[in-house]
Length: 326
Image 1 (cartoon, rainbow, N blue to C red):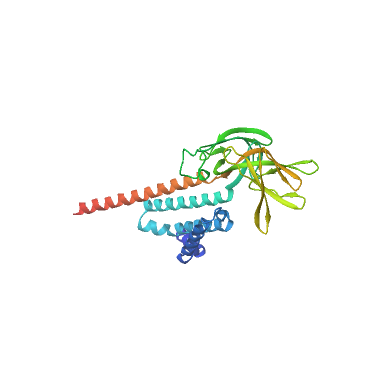
Image 2 (image 1 turned 30 degrees about the vertical axis):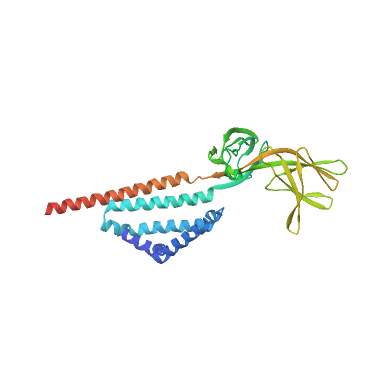
C-alpha cells in the first residue's frame, strides 16, 4: 500500500515530466539547438546555462519516466527486465550529467605564443614560455603541383616551459597532433596558425628610435606626423620583408617594403626591421567530464547486455517450455 501511495503521489506532482506532449517537444527543441550550435566555429551555446538546463530537464524527465514505469515493468516482465531498463536509463542520465558537468567546469581557449616570450592566459593557472619553435618547410620538389603555403609544415616542434606561482614547473616538446597534459589541462599546438612576429624600429627626424612590437593578430597603428601606418610581414623561405601600408577610404594603400638590409624612408622617418621571431597558435582545453562519460557509457552498455541477455534467455525458456508441452 505504501508503494502504491508513493507512485500515486509521484504521478500527481511529477506527471508533467513524463507526458509525451512535454517530453517530445523538449527533445525536438534540444536536438534543433544542438544541430544549429554545431554550425558555429566556436559553439559557446553548449556551455550556456539555458542549454545545460535543457539537458538537465531531459535527464530529470527520463528519471521520472523510469520511476513511473517501475510498477508496470515489475508486473508484466519481472525483476530481471526491470534491472536492464533501470540500468540503461541510469547510464543515459549519467552521460547527461557528465555533459552538464563538462559544460560548467570545462573550457577551451585559443591563443598565440611568440618565441622567447612569456604568454599569460588569465584563465590558466600557469604561464607559458616558448623556448624554441623548430619549423621545417616542404620543398617544391616534395609537392611540385601543390601550394606549399596551404600545406602543414614538414616539422613543427614547440619546446615550451611552464611556470606556476612565479617558479619553473616543467618543460616539454609538443607538436600538432601530439597534445601535452599540464595538470589536467591539455595543450596542443595549431597546425596552420604559424607565422612571424617582428620588431619595427622607427627613427624620427631627430634620430630618436622607437621599437614597436608587431604581431599579425594585433597590428599597431604607427603615427608618422599626420599619417597613421601599419605593417605586416612578407616572410617566406629565407627572404625577410615587411610591407608598410595605410588605410584610405576603407582601402589598403601600400607605402613601401622594408628589407633586412634596406630600411624605408617615409616623411622624414626611417623604418627598419628589428628582431624577428616565430609564433604559433595554441589550444588549451580542460575536459573534466571524460571519466563521467566513460562510466555512463559502461553502465548503459551493461544495461543493454543485461536486457538482451535476459530477453534471449526468456525466449529460449519459452521455446523449451513449448517443446516440452508438445
